[in-house]
Image (cartoon, rainbow, N blue to C red; front, side, top):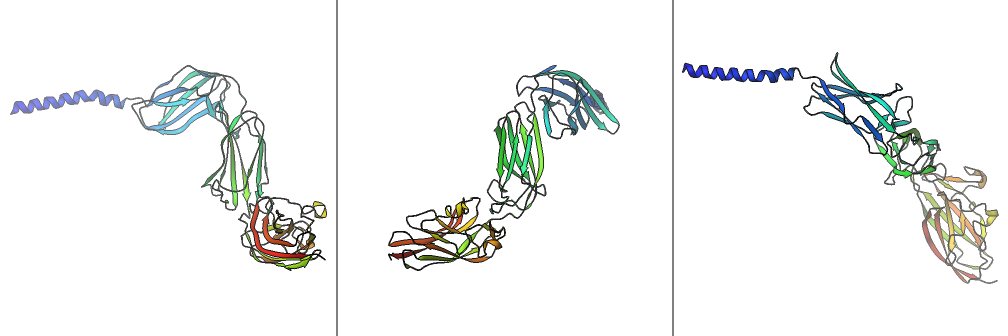
Length: 406
């Protein structure tokens, strides 16, 4: 019995003695070791070239990796990033580019020029315990111009996307010195949401323009507020530049209107008589509707059109402005148009130019046409028109009119 107990103690002692070297090795493991690069030279003839900076971490800590050029310029590749101890080495793949610095906020990343660089890997394992190892490698590259976003103009800086033809869109204008991939996006006022506008679009070295209507990719209007726009340009060498600014969206909304009443009279008349259209229109949307003339009560001849009277003063301006129109079968295009306003020209929001129909407002418009057409029966109808957009209510209140000869 005593012999068995003695033999068991001998085996336990031997196991302890065998384990001691391993425990000692762990206790003595270097916090930072085996720092090296995969190559002594990084040739940047084309995009995609890279070298690896590898290192081993024996104790948990925070890693900082920097480069310093021959001119003393310093670049930070990693800054106080946590690293647990690991048996396998950590690897940083370096593609020859480095982040820009605070002195050049427009440069996000840039390809480093040719030269010898000193890399330093530093591990802060605990307060006061810092390990650091350094080495060198050489970069061989050709100088290439940065894809700087030049001559940026953003106008206007406040838009009101409500289809009233005034500041409905913002224009982004700029030029690039080289071919680059461009992305433009907007960030919501609270910073929580990003709205893509232009996504990785390749653009050449020339003037560029983009028009934004205050809408997301799904076509919905963004809420009023101050948005941050970010324009990013990236070339094939990894150079990245960026421009940032703010843009205000105010008084946005969807325009809408409806014809609530229409009457065309008389239904029998003689050639040379005047046909009268009486229409009521209501703004059923949540934004003002901009309109222009001729004013209510204006008289046309069937030989006229809105674009020919008064030396073209009331020609189609596009931009989504609103008017009420009168047409007849066989003619087309609503040649007779009037403002959706009861007020005289001098009382318009812009006297003699444009007026506004406010949300919820309803107006009665009267239009007159002197019949000079050689037809004995004409089918007239009215339509609500958005210039440059289309007809909101076309072919409304079709009315047959008998025309006799004097």
